[in-house]
Image 1 (tube, rainbow, N blue to C red):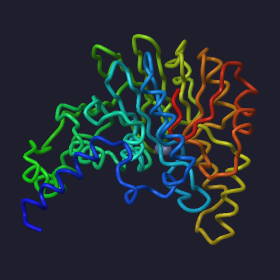
Image 2 (image 1 turned 60 degrees about the horizontal axis):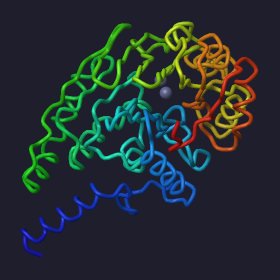
Image 3 (image 1 turned 90 degrees about the vertical axis):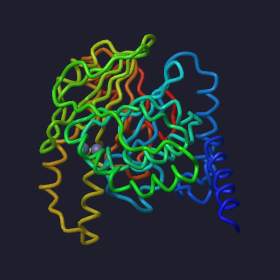
Length: 340
Ligand SMILES: [Zn+2]
Ligand SMILES: [Zn+2]
């Protein structure tokens, strides 16, 4: 194949990628190739196509980077996208964010801003790849990113590391290279940003030793959506989410977590049960407390996400019943590509 033909066919492939949310089957993670996941993607696309008003799509609903393997076949790491008036706002970038975003059918050119809650890998590890793959699929270079320090340095460092890769495509496809994006670091509570669709504010949450760890509230014209981020039970979250339409809160189901940890120890993983449970209780919120916080905030809808443990086999009713002990509103147990 000649060089120009080669370039042409690559261009055709990339155009195809941009046009089709399906990307290529070969690139699909195993979970996304199952018929159920395909159905979820088709459902999400259909809902978003006819959507009136702001929509939230849960892209990844599992906690932590751990438990990867057969026990965790369906839940990806944490990420979300909100679509409002044709603009897309991504919150958190765990592994899977790029693929799942594409699955929704939302074009990459719609991506306006990316928000990171905190610098744990299950929330930021695919931030750089989302930028590069997004750019090659039409993302505008004026996309903005918000999150705790050192997000500027992380962005610059990543784009420097991938300069050669970006430049190959930029030259080949006659595209303006992705060199830098506008990053705003957020280290305290208050207003983060505002545009014609949404006002975004942040709070500091409890997630030691990560400092700062943020929760966010998005006040769109037609609805407000609050995110706890990763946190131990926090009154600040109840206050932030006051009167919101939707609260997306991390949730931990302690009995299943204890069983999971004991099983891991039996398999030889070098962890101590008490140490790990002490950490988990300081850093995450038992689902019963999530219900209490949602009730205090008076939100209409509580979405349980960032589920701990992220293993399969805990049914939705178990999660829902535990939250419902203390919350009388609507409870949604998060699943991949669910549109709220
Ligand atoms: Zn997390
Ligand atoms: Zn975390």
